[in-house]
Length: 473
Length: 77
Image (cartoon, rainbow over all chains, first blue to last red; front, top):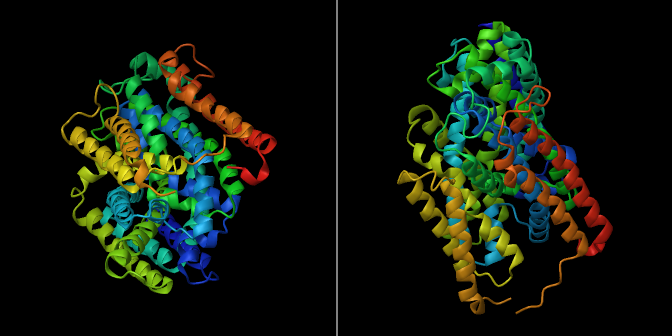
């Protein structure tokens, strides 16, 4: 067994072990499993949220965009910052409702706020439809990184199966607390790797970051501003995209629900204040992508830029560290996605439709059983049918973002009813599907999801005004 | 219609602080989309974005301070 492979395997196994141990002492109920008993302090919340946010896309996608698109990649720095700013105001309110009414999921929130079973089931289905392809993307990234880092001594499929089964094991046993603890390993490995290669790669080829940018600007004028090398991603696209993704960020069911894990509202606010700092290391990932454009031009797939340039620069043992960081970086978000997809399917779809009145204990058992089903689905799509969900992935972010008006207006406007909120969501989704699959993204220079969000807001408000007398307060 | 309580002063000020990244990182983009002058070797656009991303925690800390200072504690949103 090669040295890099030993490093990767050790990191994956130790992480999973830590995840299993993390839940040893917690009570075996849904409250502990899904939201950690609402007892996470600033440190655990930070680890959890940072763990969710930094995915394999951070390694591969951010450098890939810097490599192949240039300036538009900077949107990645911006949208997270906007999302945390929104979360500062939004999440404490959601946390309070969660605490007062025992909510565990985003769909629980909709059921509580709108008193509509149909709407809450629908929202759960939208969430799961967005989560499954996102999970598949994480697993695919994991396979890609481990295969490349091990010098192709292990296949991507084998890497996915082993890491993901271990991930599901700690989800099953520990729930959200396991994910938060594995995030410790992940954050350390990932930050070390990113800092080393972020400064190391530009220095190796150009002697420094400033020199690298000078050379890049000379060789490819226009690459470092918007729209970079793209014809369509101009300033209007970046502006509309960061507004859309900033608003949609906490509408992902797993990010929404992570608010419930906090000990109190102040913890959430403190976390929102410091989270933007965690965006800064992404700049280092950009440095790697930009250097790769000059050092190894002509890659067919920009997402490989990070791995290829690091491999060309560092000794093989270092690739083991990169592979370990990449694998654990996929495992943490994957674990949280599995956890909330399972809870949504069992608690918010199966139980209300087929088994209303199921006990908390039964829901817990069902959710854990569902972990096995979601794991099987994730493996099926990641290993056997890698292209089956491409369309869903394309609209995942646009899709979950359409829940934003119903959440925000629902909090601000007591007389907004379920039918109006639902009409807005359906309108938004319809516009997304029409524009994206009709080949109209960007639409008039703007992100199609943003156009849909505007339509969604308009319909929600109009329908809300028309139906406000039906809604009891 | 149900009479809703007026937005408190602390919340208004906090929202103003929260507007900082939206102004600097969204509205200002058309005016900062250039390479020169470089800042510490970084192209201007990237340096601008980086600066305001790093400054956002200060804006949010100020927002938290405003809420504590000017809002009645029982209705802290």
